Image (cartoon, rainbow, N blue to C red; front, side, top):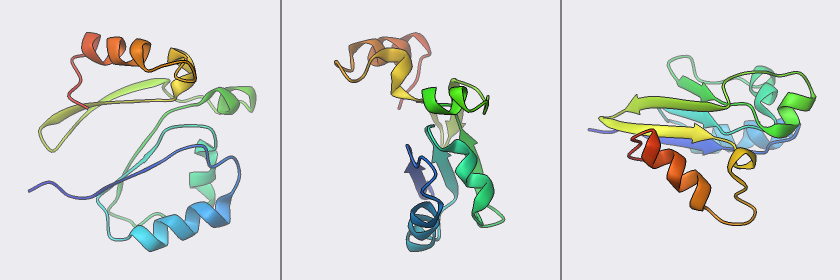
Length: 108
């Protein structure tokens, strides 16, 4: 049976808010940070058994935090694509990101 996945993004240094979200949403099995504040994870306590997935956003790059920009992972029998939207111009529409998901054979 699938577990709970907590997905966050764009915390931009709001460590207290991120920590409050994590505390409020416990328990969960997987924490996904989709970038722009990815280093904020190093300033909060993530439950010990939690799997953490993270990607770098455009602001993270400018601060020197370099992780994968696109991460493909299998969770609960599904192939998921994790990314920050800037690579695919999501501020305009979702078409480019959808195309990448199809190319990556992502389910989610």
